Amino acid sequence: MYSIFLKEINTFFSSLIAYIVIGVFLVIMGLVIWVFPDTSLLNYGYATLDQLFEIAPLIFIFLIPAITMRSFAEENQNGTFELLSTKPITDFQILFGKYMACTLLLVLAILPTAFYYYTVYQLASPVGDLDSGAILGSYFGLVLLGQAFVAIGIFASSLSQNQIVAFVLATFLCFFVYYGFDYLSRLPIFVGKSDDLVQMLGIDYHYKSISRGVVDTRDLLYFFSLTGIFLLLTQLVLSKRKW
Image (cartoon, rainbow, N blue to C red; front, top):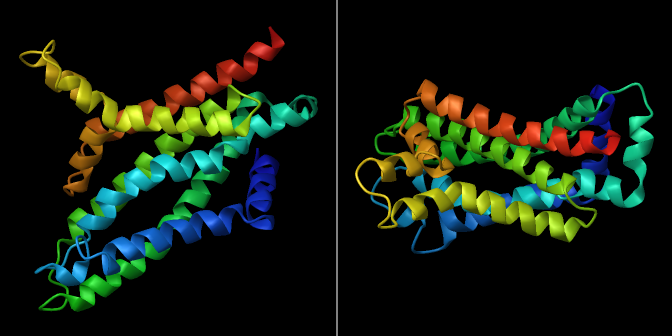
């Protein structure tokens, strides 16, 4: 598994993938937080990073599938997955190595935004007058959300030999799991408490809950379960080659 992890990391950084992903994310977030007048922090009357945590999930819906689309689609297209299968390593170790590599790249993209926190911290009047607990919870929720999207993206990549198809499918699944259940809960067929139950199936509900600064075990269980389900589905797709 460790060798697969290193191989994926080397692939990311030996090409332009890692630099483009990190650069695009930071440029977009920088424009949103500091430049665009409707969202610029400089036009707000108080110190906050709400813009970052509201826009980042939408960016991840497109950015993470771009990271994961080659994970298995490229292996299937080139026929190298069968070669990997002959090595003394299980399918799950291959899967988890790729998952951890994509997750690390995601964390490396988020990490530089800590500079935004430091800047807002210094701009606050008085200095440090901001809700650090909520910001920390939002960062934690953003990482959990990203991990779930990575699992979804890898699952989509395992279903196709074409990277573009894998990207489109992963983008659709990420969008639906994040926004879809919230939209479904508004349909008139869901009445009483059923609309709340449908809404709780979506990522948006639990992400907003963690972003308040309160880490609820129910939210953690949701993210870990969602990630585990898609990793399990990917494992089943990989295993079918041996049936």
